[in-house]
Length: 432
Image (tube, rainbow, N blue to C red; front, side, top):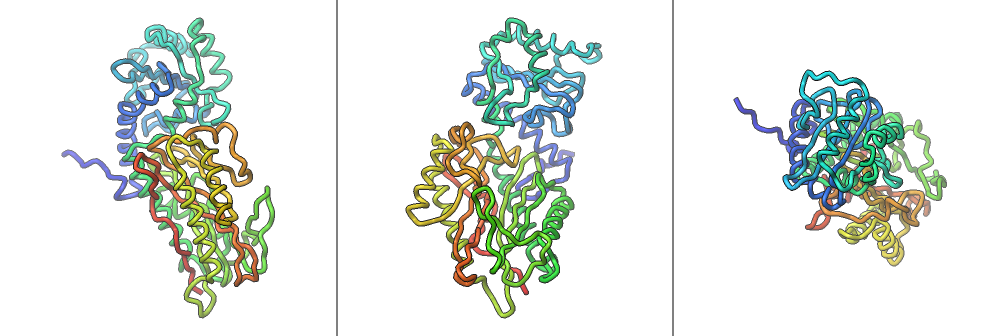
């Protein structure tokens, strides 16, 4: 009996076995259709990715079969660009999915002799430029350890002169999404919103008893129960009339302690990231705790959210393929100042990793631009966490400023920008 391929856009999270099937199919497509284009763009003929068990190159996990949860002993992946596409060879004691084995099964290879096999493959391929994972600007592209670099250069001999940083290739591989991956991220962002909505409602929130810390742990447990891991511990914080925000790193942050019970009139905020299918999300939501007799949040808080939505529009209007992250940031800040919006933008790529490789668009504690990562240009078929905040005085709180922080998944394609999941344009409401 032939089973239908699992559809991650309909049911997330999928069972682990179905996830493995989806991920391996995606990898095949990425290897055949995406990697040759990226290698040509980077001008790299042969890419070497090496890692040792428990000290893996960060990019290695994106190249291994879904059933491999780490490298085994030493695992060296060799990807050679030729006229026929990309030939993928694994220098490993164990079979590595779709990679060709460097030696026949059963052949005994002494520890350390893997490097001789790497040298043999390189000599046979005779590449002009050999990419290795070293980078000053992107940690995810800097996974070749010092000792492995030393062993590699010694083994390659004169071929070591052709080693070049593979930063452009690694970042392109990590940031570029297949249409199927974008569709799955749409479903995963929707799931994140559903979990947050459940956390900010009855019976989870008991006004006067439940704390922000309680809610953070509930969200993390709920994700675990669903089979979607949290890639960071969820953050839940409170803002309250009469408790002004505190200054930290040049920014204003909520000052209500995490162990304080939620009270009527509070503004609840959370930051949640989940992983499933080898992909990550990053989402922030805001909710208002109704006072007795209230049916809606105060106008001042709703205006603060609308101001945040307007800053989102200013960002998405300026996310243009070919611009650098720093150029986008400068353009947005100029437009925001012209409209009198007091806010910060600190958006970042998301995909295989929550804080992914690619153009950085500001940082929460530095709005002057990001040297290196901010100088990278935007490419199509990439996904970002549109992360920002605005500071708005609330008349109902005696003019006390509120920090309205928002974060949504968005996809940048040749067709423009679209939101993944449901964009928050109204405050969630928590009943008294």
